[in-house]
Image (cartoon, rainbow, N blue to C red):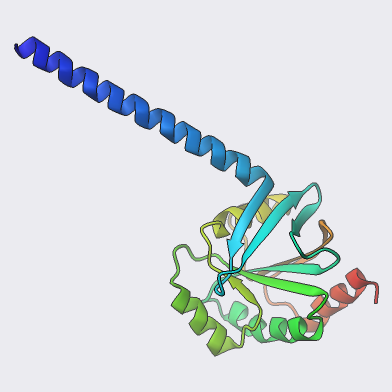
Length: 186
């Protein structure tokens, strides 16, 4: 009786762990497939942006012919806070041909903290708070060959899937605007 009970317990545990292991492999395979091709970023306004990796950069569905700036920042970072007003100015000035997406480096940040950042620093451009933030940040840093320990703010500019320029640290609005104009052919 003891042998039967022990054997039954052993079989139950082995089946349980085998099933969990296979489920985990399937999830990892799906995530690996997505991480190499596309990312879904969700804004504070609950709008979703489909970002796709290209050989030379990234594109966003619905943003064809627009300059895209990924602003990788932290809400606690003084240079990141200072740039928010400048990015807002550029977003307003080039509203039909520019899409700025602020991607926070902070994991599991409450939306209220991003809303506070927006209010305090006049960040009137798209801010995303998504489980995909870390994945897109890592993909951008890898493409730029920056490694995992890069300085913020990091602004990366693309047009039609091609890298235009990137800026690490505090950057003058005039430099960013000059690259926007070049990318737009102005």
